[in-house]
Image (cartoon, rainbow, N blue to C red; front, side, top):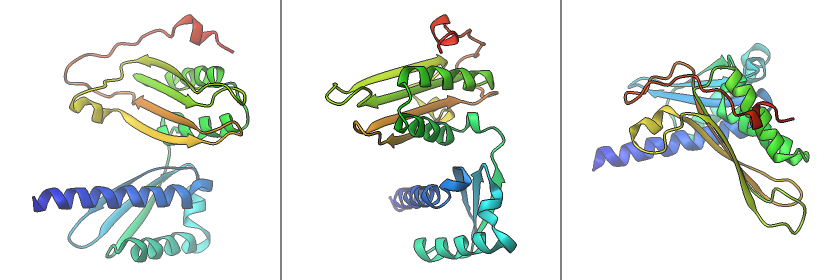
Length: 208
């Protein structure tokens, strides 16, 4: 029971740190964070599209961030390293934020999701699912859900852990819209099946 409580506590701290970093490093293109605890230090690796914004001149920004995390989350001896995102189109949080920002600017939801899905598939993703749910039309219209998907996205069992998933909320003028992005990264190996390339449906491939 003690081990279970510690596992839950560690997961909550990681979630809170991730939420804090997403807000603090939004201009740096925050994608995700990895945390590894050892008896001596806590290694925190931050993945962003613009590492220079995190490091700052002479390391001032990253030093201030390290000190803030230490005090805010009571972490002893945190060490932050910054890694550059290699392919933003395969990072669910970056994709979800792009969709949310586009919806807030008035983009057509269905065309937007089709376009984003095509871009992700072109990068070699084995599975993609994009969902927008909420006030997707003009004021007074009913809430609805638009979902587009490609390839293999497991929905049950331990293999769900092989799917990168992010949920965020967009706030256009007509009301909130939930955005969900699920991506199976290129090269992912599933123990129960072999994933083969699947052609995009014509309705998506030719959508404008």
